[in-house]
Length: 196
Image (cartoon, rainbow, N blue to C red; front, side, top):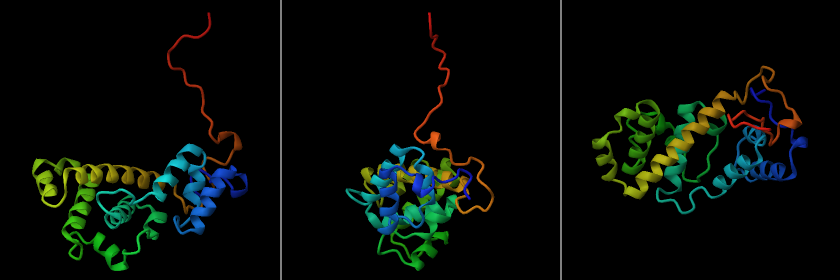
């Protein structure tokens, strides 16, 4: 069981349940478990789902590079559910194996640079210096570089968070399901005086 107990399917709101069941049925998600955790914040689940539905739409990088980045990010973050799924028809097992190879020899120049950028951002972001940006500019436009950076940053953070949840864990949840926790917040003393 994950660290945070997934909301049981029968306890999901109708909109969350439709997103999760429909997404799994359509092959958008390999497992519903992370989504059942994200459903504790309905707006977050809706945002993640909207991004997944629109993945590749209007991208400057192209759907294949985005998918290679997503899989490599999952590998780096040890996110099991995301490593298992494939969201772009062009991705083969050989492509995935190339992501682990430091030289990424079977990838094209843009794909190699994108993976190299992600690897550095994950392990040694200080190595992404002016010279590295010049290398990126040799194969990408500035718009593509900006999209590459934000895509990698979002993906890495999400995959690392999912890993911390121990989605396929076997221990009892640390934080068990409680209906009152869905879309709830605690009042936090923000230092502003209240009352008379």
